[in-house]
Length: 159
Picture (cartoon, rainbow, N blue to C red):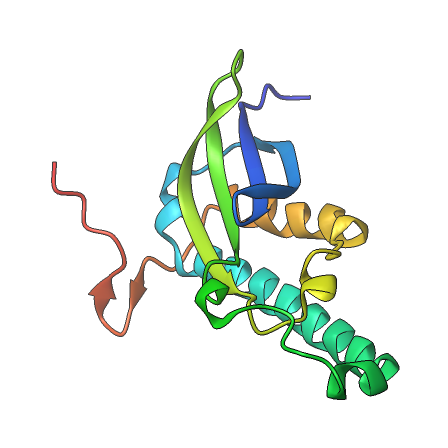
């Protein structure tokens, strides 16, 4: 078996600064250029859309199950708090193995204020995390990546 370089990574999903899920994982033969690839953008977008779809489905089920209560009640949250509650998905390389601080190279915000709080505070992606990390790992270790879109470079190194 040949010696393969391993890079430690972090996957982090938070809601209003509170950690929902955090996983450290290894990527063999990490390609640093993958951080700027179209494929990474697409996989993060797919994960975000999947989380949003799950929330929509759970929100629908919650609203149907509690329709009598919801129609007769006051608003659950004040409008001032809308927009403050967002999921933040981040992926980064672990820079310091002692403190496990990560250098985030891609992040995506998922607005969640329009879902009922009982739905958004009970999100659980643990059953899907193995597949999600496998998809991210595959892109981060890929050799052939799309680095242009519509004739434009996705990243310009200004050094």
